Image (tube, rainbow, N blue to C red; front, side, top):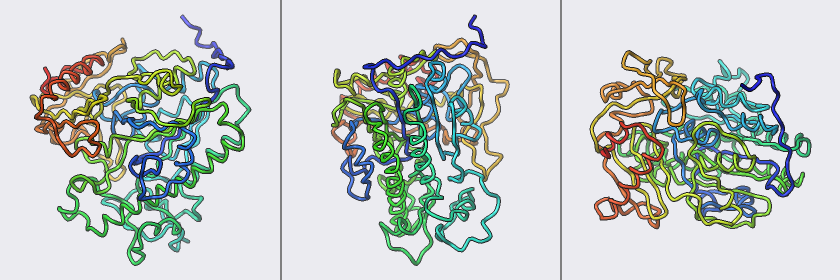
Length: 525
């Protein structure tokens, strides 16, 4: 048995073994289609484009587990989450990659304004980092209990409140300057961290989890009216989540126009402050020995495709699930890669680079050979989805969205942490507790007992599993799109090509040892 009081055994950097350090910057809800480096022209992203000019641009990179915390689990734990649970902390049979780095003597840090990382359901992702800095005040963060009594409307301009009151509606009154907004503070904090730490560690890993451009789409005046001129109306900073939102009268066309413009303002503002980080990389010559990954968790609908806004529980189309990834890697010539990749592959690449021993089952493939140009591809397919809804399988030729075409069987949550996304306005909203239907089972590759709690269609209809939706998507139809059809306008589900994707999906689910009920509810048993 290993001595629990034995200190980690540092593994010194070996010249010629690859980048010495890694910085991963996650910008939440970053729409690939709106970045200049991916052909976007609607909004200005000069610093993302500046980074892209010295990076590899991945053109077929996809989200896998959605939404926020499942996507971070993909990156930090390297395992797809959505087939087993809707949302949650790091479980006791797995670990954050920062822990494995700590065991190898790598200096680690996390800088973030993402409130879910400090709430039930995400509260233990930061604990294995050597240092962490939580920038307060974003979205639902309960940072302040009352408005600043001296607030007179600047720099936080008058804004409408969403369908519920959120912590940010109060916190925003305490910002005195643009630099006080959470996103700018996080980017400035990252630049300062690099200034303090460059050259002072044998190796380091810095994870920057920036919640912008996620809503609220709130910016000070120099950004707020950059893409619209509705100065006579309060800012629309909270987008609705849903489909057919104009047709249903949830918002007006004018509000929809402003919301989209305000997303663009938030994007351009965080792009500006990202420039501070790039400046620090320049100052210290870090590009010579430090890899930088720019990633996101998923996109954000802004009125496209059936008037969708937000991340509604609906099929994951490319607007939401095809995401950007830029990788600046010392020694790799800037350019593009069309290899099929997904978020768990970032974890696998870090484990490869730092020669880490990851003990739990993972689903990623190292991208190092693709990055360094020695191989054209790393994987031939990937899975994608929300818990309890459609499951997508993607290969180089297309994407198959498998609807819930099977029986309305029980769907189980597998977890020992037992949590889902908190909504502070509704403190009674939580994952239904395990009951006498629960059993102990084991996750694939693990001998740690786990609570497996089945939920029926009636349970789901009553909201027992928040984020799974009503009847977990039962009755949804399957869709198939060719890889060249990036707008996903021609459904090929009735073509002969479907048979290949049905077989591929069955193979992919079998490969990861997905629960048997997934095959039943998808009609693949």
